[in-house]
Length: 285
View 1 (spheres, rainbow, N blue to C red):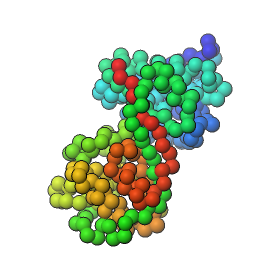
View 2: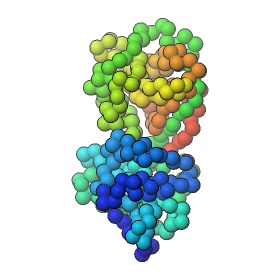
View 3: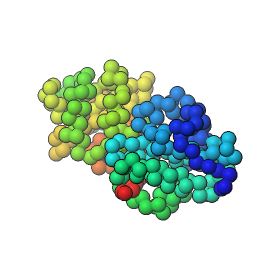
View 4: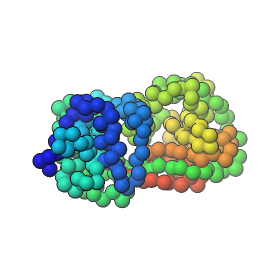
């Protein structure tokens, strides 16, 4: 591996970082396809620090891997670790992980999180060997929902047009912290005019809500929450029913829902398939 060096991701053109990232996930457990524009958007949305991220370069010219690090105050998250097939199982992944861990520590970070997809045994061994430990399970849902018949018609449900009503009290609606990619800093980057929503409760202070975006027959649940934990499951079931009623024949998408999140159980009960499961791991410094 003497011919492979690590450089800061902000020291090379972003196109090189993108190519290293995309090629690093070639033949991956789950295919990763990102256009350059999509990659650039992810960098901005997820607060990836190019200065703290690294790119592996072979013979000084050929990108062959990348490790992306996002930072929010004392928290950090590995936004992807990829190594091109020709240099996998050579220790390069470990080198890159140790490099971004060092970068995190120098910036005063006290915890790093990442996700490992079920079945990626090589990555699991790598992370566990470095010291990461399982924190919780996350699931991705995609498919048709069959809510309880007329579940929403008995409730006082109204269209939520202003995400600020709930995002200004975000913690109160999220007793289970969201995954990095669906936490408030990422949500605030959405154009609020493109978000639709349903809510229950006072129109100035909703009790429960769902926010979503519609893309033809696909409806992505962007955020959901409840300030009344004892009623969260019932409320969210009503709101999902209203969503489906207003978007007939749609397929729902929800990303990285912790299994403890009430919406997770609601989508399962409505028959929405889990298409990907993974474990969130953490390393405390």
